Amino acid sequence: MTAIRLRRALVEEMFAHARAVAPEECCGLLGGRGAEASSVYQLRNVARARAVSYEAAPEELLDAQRRMRERVETLTAIYHSHPRPADPAPSASDVKLAFYPTAVYFIIGFDERGECALRAFRISERESRWERAEFDITG
Image (cartoon, rainbow, N blue to C red; front, side, top):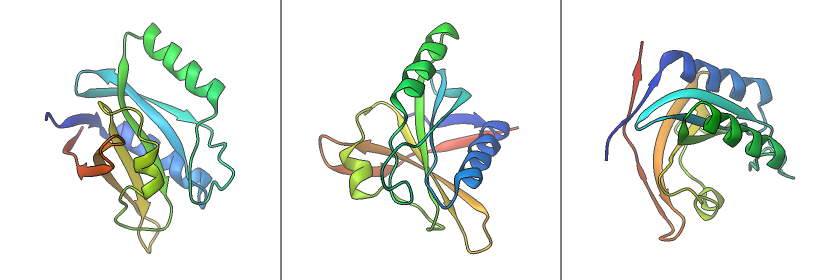
């Protein structure tokens, strides 16, 4: 599979979102064309246990999808944070709720100094498995 590409500014926007809501999990979408992400859509986490799970606010999710269509973008990736691990990986519930098999799933973790780490995954809810995905950060 082709590595997803995203600009440094998009990564910093996701990191800022994760820091702003920590110790709760953040969530959002990346829109773009093909393997090139071009927009971040921050979403409000409305899960009951936001410290260990995420659920995007339905009205914000629909609004983000509408804005993607207006910009002629498609869903490139889904992101959320795991505020505790420095080397985040999908949880069992992340795999169970991965309903977009063509999307890359980014997970943001924090090291002991509070620095963000970004990891990418391809997740198959149907097959109950995940694997690391390649990504490139540009300028």
